[in-house]
Image (tube, rainbow, N blue to C red):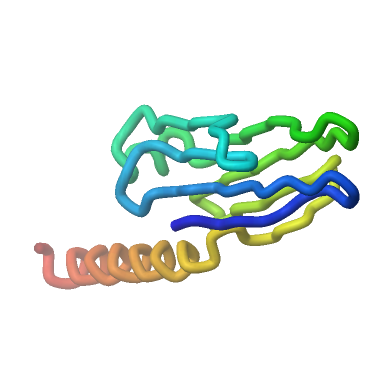
Length: 119
């Protein structure tokens, strides 16, 4: 999953956030240069249980500097981008919300079947 957005008024920068669906590395690029990588320490399910949220901070711009902050919380399905402490994107990966909701529904169904039938 890739999200691309631009920041800046006079000096614009293209920010690309890539979150692989099944991989362990999240990559952040500014103008096609990697500025941050977040490597998950555990497989996706264990990562969700042990460390559901993290923040990636970086700055971009020379003449017009901006502080960019990505706040990721997998458990609450919150993937937000902040520019100079103001929210600019409320959901970086809208398709993930559907995947996570489906996964939770399947887990709830399996738990219900297990409690009823004793699987």
